[in-house]
Image (cartoon, rainbow, N blue to C red; front, side, top):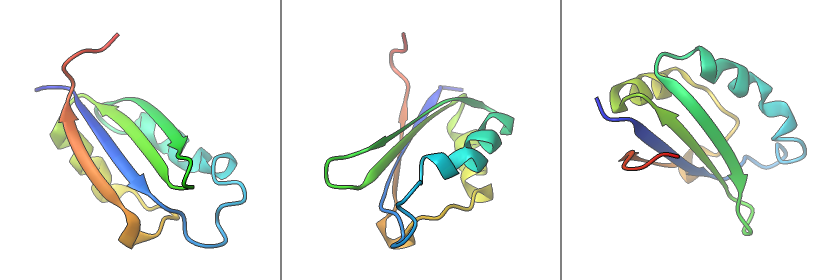
Length: 89
């Protein structure tokens, strides 16, 4: 099993922008309890969109967790990709 990076790009639904990071505790608390979770990094781009990078032990565990999560994001704006970890420091 190769470690996997899950890269999710998205925009928030109108009206949910005010304290997205502060209100993100539910996801932050939920992720570490998921099988295969290793780390998470959430960032906002200059254009206002967001990127969420989650490191998993395997692609399968990332995909299984994705089936369980519910978020306050604009569904049409979501783009998810995965990449095998080649180097980690």
